[in-house]
Amino acid sequence: MADLFSVTAPLTLLAPDGKEVLLAEIYKHPKGLLYFETFWHQQEPHGIGIHLIKGWLEGEGPWKISNHIIKVLACHGTEACLANDFTQWQQYRLSNPTEYPPQPLIDSIAKKLGAETSEKG
Image (cartoon, rainbow, N blue to C red; front, side, top):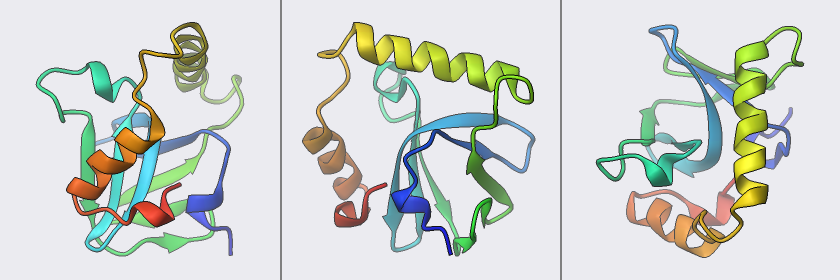
């Protein structure tokens, strides 16, 4: 079984309403899965880009939790918009290395929200 929290490739989440987003950070949570969207740290009000999905995580990739589907981002030809979003995210991170919060701070935020930070993905 592929462990979601050890995957290093970019991940996307498809919500039941059809909205698909890139995942910047993911954490195990006692109630399910905590995730941070890309650019979560720039969104107002603070915290709007951080979400908890309650439920049981299932699958080997794609993974499912409460009618949400998490999968590895496909190539540019199949998911061009998301692939473009990922390229923009990578460029932002490379061009602005000090603007994105350091991992210990992100882990601290996740922990305050109840996540299991020792099992961060």
